[in-house]
Image 1 (cartoon, rainbow, N blue to C red):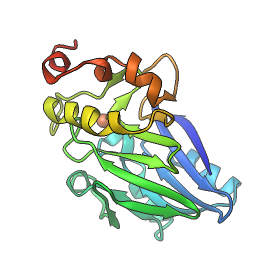
Image 2: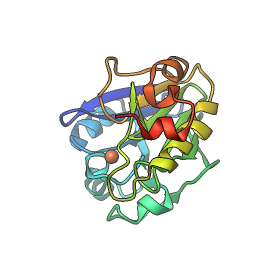
Image 3: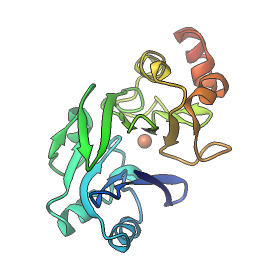
Image 4: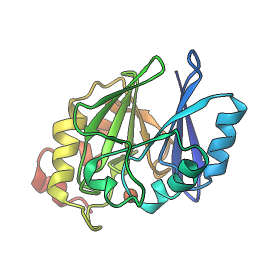
Length: 206
Ligand SMILES: [Fe+2]
């Protein structure tokens, strides 16, 4: 399996997941430069099976409709709550413990509200963790936008992501850190939003 981290727009990351064995691909968060993402897929002679939206915000999802119009067989994947804001119909609704196969790859989904009400993270083949705007390198996503909630974010980070294995590579939705990706184990001790001990400390992070 291959995960390509592709910088799009100003500081967004889109991701291209590909299973070389069965020539299948998924795009995660096609916010900007959707044509660039499709070029990668056609150059590698892959079939696009899924469009996965970690959350509904425009900078992560605006390429969705154009791709669906060009490739109607692609399945759009998001949570029920964020799917309502996408402006396109979902083909697959995911929640905690949902699992999809992409060729020989396994995608496990976690519902991680806090930045939006229906934000999700995706574990890829027990190797990578795509975190959208839930977790960045060194920080977490904003909770002051519509649908955001500080307590929910704390619970998503500390009751879900902190329980995942240290070896996972965190691939965030924006290039906000000093590195573009990192191990979850390193983030657990260096990321200020994961290093706090309780909700009170979390709420006081500037
Ligand atoms: Fe966002």
